[in-house]
Length: 391
Image 1 (cartoon, rainbow, N blue to C red):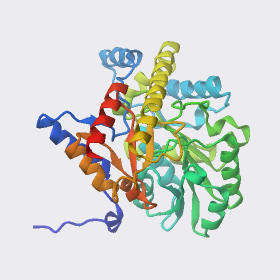
Image 2 (tube, helix red, strand yellow):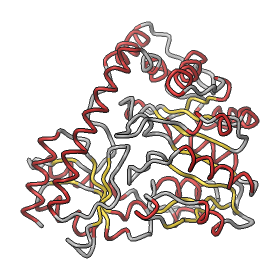
Image 3 (tube, helix red, strand yellow):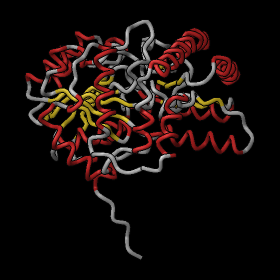
Image 4 (tube, helix red, strand yellow):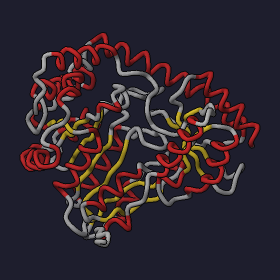
């Protein structure tokens, strides 16, 4: 038998622990258990009907072929128009690359900019795939521990201290996963100036854009200084706000100088993003669709407002309230010594699925749980009642 031949990088690629918990949740469901899902970052709403109708009409025509590597011209123009009408941001369609999900956008940005040995600074806790994607392109993810004192976002002082001659750039997310915190326009500008002064890049993950509560939805590209910056990349997605998770569609806004190089990579990596998904997304910006999406955003806000006090009453310590996304990042050190053990108890004994902090980095992961409010309010309250029996 030929021995398994794995690349050296694979020893550094960890599993996505939430998917392991999801697998267990499905096993229990198959056995007849009623599981309340608060683990996976996926909206529970179906794709809005106008998008389904648009895709159905396109598929019925039978002309389902590749699109250009950068995406449908009409969709790139629609995204550009969305930036203009929603945020008063003047972003040329030529800078917009339609991708196979936000993961595809991140992959293209890193592949185009990361050489072996380059370092990317990444907040910890943060979305786990970011550091593993960096490693996949032979870079190094250098984590910056963040906590509630800075709303789980990095400061320029931390960036200055962590920056080395090998640093390639900084990744941030707003709203963030797992904490739901938001960077202000001034904070983004300061981070961009800090990275640019050191010859580095700034990559901003905005995939939860639109899902904000108590603050206006925003983009780094709304500031003319940032929109014109030659070191700023913005990743976005049709998955979260637009409710198209399974369609696997996102986009990347890149400085003009990088677009041709990214196009070459896109052609080789995946030829083009899903054609039916792109035609579905053309309907995402129609007034009726946006009205549906705003109603759903309000529902998420109501769920957040129901769940926050209920969790606090149980003893969860939530030091920074989420302003976006659909997660609560809770300190459980007053309830358990290990959040992973607690998550397993909750799923086995209470039939409630949550995500332990272990997925999001190395900074105090065992005292935190991420809890998603991606199910109905009555189910959230039932989950709290079930957790009470365990806690």
